[in-house]
Length: 367
Image (tube, rainbow, N blue to C red; front, side, top):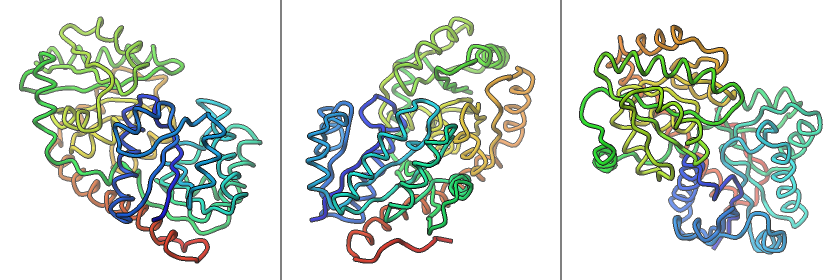
């Protein structure tokens, strides 16, 4: 029975990251039905209960080392773990886990990773070493591969897609409708908005409020969707600026979030997985780019992405109206494109299964 230790940003109440963990666990169990999974988590009890796995505290060194010793594979991912914008300690933490695993002779997979931004020389050097040490590297977009190439990495890589895109969407629409009904949202056109704390987000909030008020005058409803508890501090003041806007509670599960988003007419947001969930539901969206990962995904699905700051209300309204003018075509394109990306995302776990059942070294580049 292979034993996999999963490391990522888990147990912090971020809907997108929790969905990523669900996707990884689901795909691993599909590829390796007998796999034994352990997760490093900020809230191990919650993670164990929510996902049916063993979980240990991610900062408890003795527990982490014990699980590394027991594991056959360290799976580092998914998401933007190797970046130094949100925290300078990110790269060092995840790199030390990889180094520890290799010192113990364990296999390492960087799984569905988005690389960067990396603003410091030490971070760039460390990521280069980590990627060289890994037995398998899968990336969620081409730009991450280009980022590694700029760092001087010359080794086989697999470019797949965000792990969440491999999750099944079916059967969640009614659940989403009930959540909206309880929040006072009826039938009709709905604008969904997701903002997060970030420098200069207050400036962008004004443009988003202008867009929402404009659509309200046309009979739209506005739903504010937090993907992390911290989002409330940005979305609450926004609700005050938009008459009749509804602010959902934080802590939505993947099932609840995709159910809600499947009822949107249009989505405008910063949170990457808010935009991914919307695309999975076939909902046209506009990304507000605070991080390259937003641009990268919106480019993958052919949707507009605007700089967070400066952001003008006119530019935002133009982007939304442009999507709505071709709504049916956009929805059809999204279904096709997401289906393609879903197939690519499902490859990650199959590659891990091959690594665990083979004594071969590093994989070959996936076309």
